[in-house]
Length: 87
Image (spheres, rainbow, N blue to C red):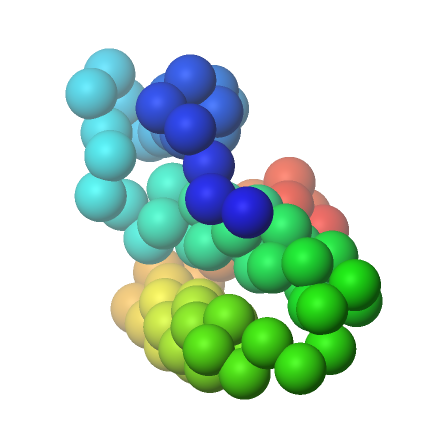
């Protein structure tokens, strides 16, 4: 369900704004999106796993807040990012 170090580094390379960028909203949203998709697949098989469901809802909320931040404060970056990640 969780991403290993190599997978996170690949996502960071793809969405980083500059070398060593790990905390920009784009990178965080990309990592959360991948984690959300994996948790969704897990919950399809394990419908009664409420602990994972809660974690999924927390990740969705955090991603929503990060996207909203990016949309209000950096609309140009948001447009480029939304096309790249297909939100």
